Length: 310
Image 1 (cartoon, rainbow, N blue to C red):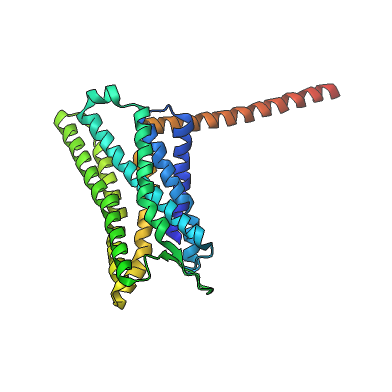
Image 2: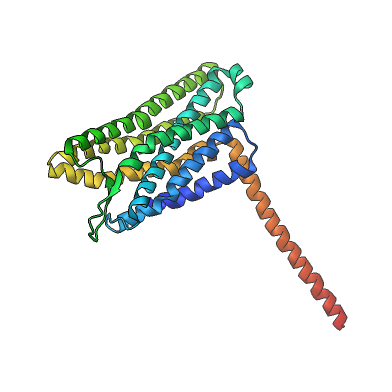
């Protein structure tokens, strides 16, 4: 509950700030398109976390009904897939910028980036359809209601569907994206070192942080998804207990990734930091200027009234 709550606060605030600046302050560029869509995906994901917080707080009792059970899971996975796919697209875009600079000058436009981002959202929606279909509640009239994946009444069919869902999710949301991210950033680092593009160690630190955060946040989640698959269909009390304890923890790590993304991909960027600092400075200057003007106005009014009294 604590981790979910922290993820909700940091995720909504951090991604909300990014949405504001990329959507309304900064000039529309390819990077701005990527970061805006990434922030929207992470913001919506963290915005729905209070439902999960309530679910955990009530000892996994779901009081919101069947529709919200389906909607909550579907929205969460749409934005999780969109976030992961966008991280992959960002790494591909950076790879292309380094390896094919001439092509980028002629074809890398915000319009093309917007089309790619739209395709990412459609792809995320397609991969999230199973959660809208299989998500269900045990509506047997009891006071305790759980929101769970109801794959089928028949155990063999349920196992096959559950297994297919876990494998597809692992391949589509971790194995392929992580492989692409590793490849792209490895090539970028090699090119930077080979051509001596920079003497700073910051690009290496940022890239390393991106890879480590993705691995740490998502790999345990998929490991426990496979363990959960075994625990649900094999009678093993120890394994069931491990999964019962581990799933909330690994899910928390996955949720934290939505808070880390703004820091790694946006706040470390020079353009965003400059816009943020300039905007914050202008807001403070405006506030102090208005306060100073109000004080001067009050002072003048007071001096006028005093002179009239004299």
